[in-house]
Image (cartoon, rainbow, N blue to C red; front, side, top):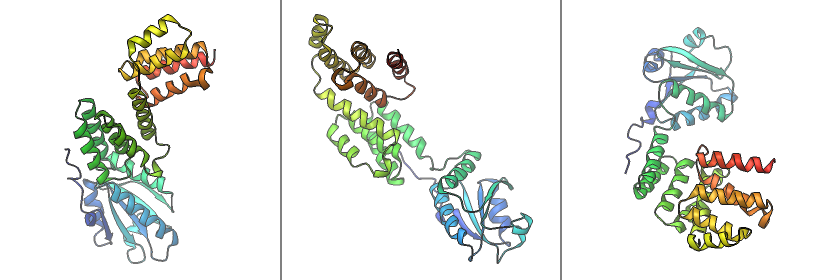
Length: 303
């Protein structure tokens, strides 16, 4: 199983209470290797009480990709004056010994996270301590037939970051690859509310639905014979498409569903279109099958 979190910096080293006396060491020197965010604040400042904790949370989440120094301007006015801090909160970002970015006033969490991510990327790091790379490794494990190792890796990632929706969806796919549809569906149904609407989870949901269908797919040869005998039998063609997809013949399945849609767009309450979208959602957006299928479907819709 992939080892995670080995490079995580101690939290005490990530966020410090700074001063004029330690500014050169804590900010200028430290920023030569790692970006440092400087939060100029004061105890009486209302917005500071909101911004400070939000900055600390984002820096902690970045797992060592950036650091933070808090400067009380009531007690330390030298560098605040040199940097022309005229109102608080004021935030500066230092990298390689120089100020490189900054902002004034309280900002929303999304802007704070973008600010931290930009700094981490500037230094060639990432805000998640390499977890995105670990997700990619686990995804490749599934492709290579190492589904159990992938599942173990996704679990380890979620232990580090329980809000990692990509790892959560990957865990569902890993169990599908292991043939354990019940377990995959149970994990899907237990997904945190905040994951609702995430593309990764929508894709996993589509894959679970298609896997359930595959369990009941009929014999391909018999279904093809039924379609050949009566091309207008759209139910037989639909069942044939399900069987093709279950056998891994995704492109052929898409073509059969497109043919149903061409013949009767509203057949069975638009079942062909719904099934096409299930398949498209289950695949990567840039998959040629998706791109070609969507193009053909659109041409039929707007014909």
